[in-house]
Length: 348
View 1 (cartoon, helix red, strand yellow):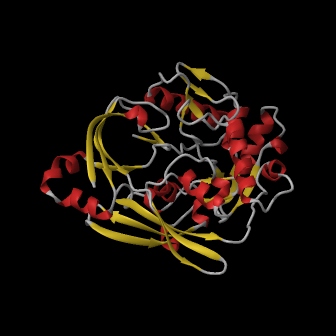
View 2: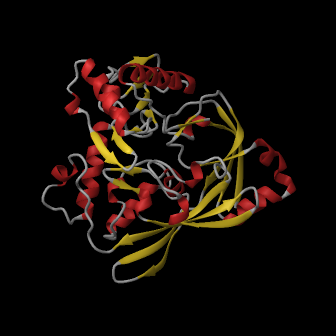
View 3: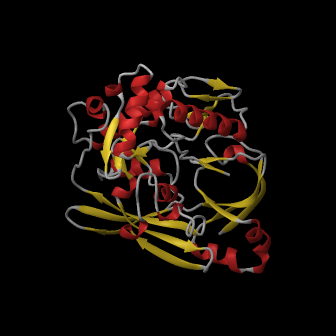
């Protein structure tokens, strides 16, 4: 099935709720639909407009009044069991299924691996592209492979986990040669039949309590933690974590410690995680210490209980207004702490 809508309001196509209208929104179900879209002459105008695959728009900021291209949205939400053994179950999940719906089904079936990602907005397809993560878990941890449609060559492609070059908030699909060329059609995931609770991040273990092998209790704890510090999707416009946590070399980290100390801040309070490239810092901590928590400029603001989140306070902010706030935060954090923040959100 291919369904095409014209001049669709962008406010319902991204969780930030900004923008005017999209010229085209194309809903599709299968790879065969996509092949028809890119090869049949009746769709030449849509193809010429430029195709942009999107999920629920939870990682997008429309910074122009109107988007003149064509947004591709998967309407298929199937989950199909491929195989099962004593330890795990293999599923193929359609790209259009809500990630949180998948997690809900997994928890109700006592299948482990994605429970820490509960309540992250977006689709399964987008999760495979973004490698979303929370509470010490990343989506790549369960990915076996990804089925795609190659827009340029009009053919199906399959990438196994090793080919996807997964990293922190990164994958093969986010880089120039594959970005917007590969449309994720489904994701193959492996889930454990045995408990594998991962509760070391933040205060998750404390929130879960003693029932650490109860997957539904873990999901409930993650949901409570997220609800306590993040705006409700669909009520307050946001895109989740607006910035990536910066990764710096050990040498650069020493310079940052000096900058923090020079500003009268106890550097020992700075969250730091050892990674292969050096140190991963907390963007939220840096934004907070730079004095931006709860600050508003016009209709855009920094969420009071999580400074990593920028919000469309009253639904009246433009994308450009939010991007301007982000730019000011980046400039200030760079000036004060010698750290360059990188937006996780994609501007369109």
